[in-house]
Image (cartoon, rainbow, N blue to C red; front, side, top):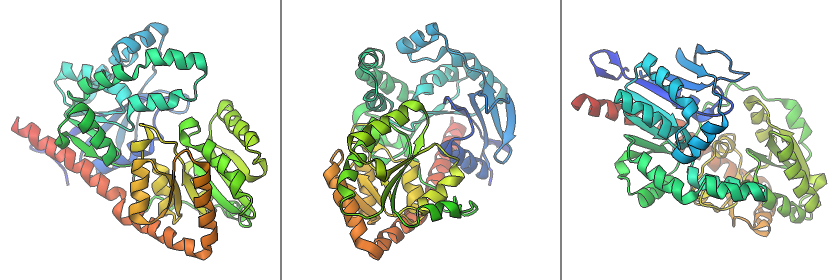
Length: 419
């Protein structure tokens, strides 16, 4: 079914994505694009040109248009951004993109690009939707914990939390809609910025129930871990991720669980590997840990299936309290019980659906208690696995979040008709 602003004219949505890796891949963005195109909307996207994504223009994902631009950022641009929150190097690419595509709405992914998109949007009198993948001011504080002393000191001035909050409030109030990943995130925006609830839509990082159907299983991976009691962590590496607590808990668990193995997938560079190795030596758990670099998405299925339990052990912070990573639902969709820290959004999902266990964030002893409890359950652990699968397939299916996204744009289209 097609949704239009007038007559048979399709509603055009121009998305802007500012990430170092360009596009594709981006799980969240890809899901939103496919949902909107399937509903009859016309979608195009502007992203960064990279070595792997080198084409200036191409059609992918059901005839979806991708425009790419080489983005170069010099020192003066960096200084300008710190002062104004405007990415000067993106101004002309966005201007040309909007001029060429003539959209009805601009959909800006993550707050880092929203002010710049809004500046150009005003020239064309086009409304902007802000898609907040995370709470950026809170995220900057969390990321800062991994910095060295001088960089941390510098960041406290260049990325001042309170200034970012003031500016974010000003910018978000100018957006026609705000998309967030969790109800907790929505409540925070309402409470801090006093923005009306009707302007904020929750579109979570849920998964398509058929996501893994066509992905083959690597039986070599299953065989490799068949004689081990394997725990799995997939994701970014950093102080706020809770891997310090996880590795500390291993020094307790290894005394109670034979053939224990923790597999960590997601290392992207030397510094991240060094960080993990330092922790592994600190807690004397070398024999119980395997570190794997970032791998293709299709391989994740096999590693998840080879595991007994899967982890989201975030350390508690303002940032992680509202975060819901894709991997949580990927674990659940493949019938794996999960152990999560008691960050609000994670705790709510696991406790409401009895799909795993919750430990006190930052507490390795309590995490060890949950892991040992999982081991001692034996075959009864499967009850939690079935609950996880049912919740991911039904209650937290991407279909429901996709419908909320589509409904938002239908309502916006009707509003624009009236105006």
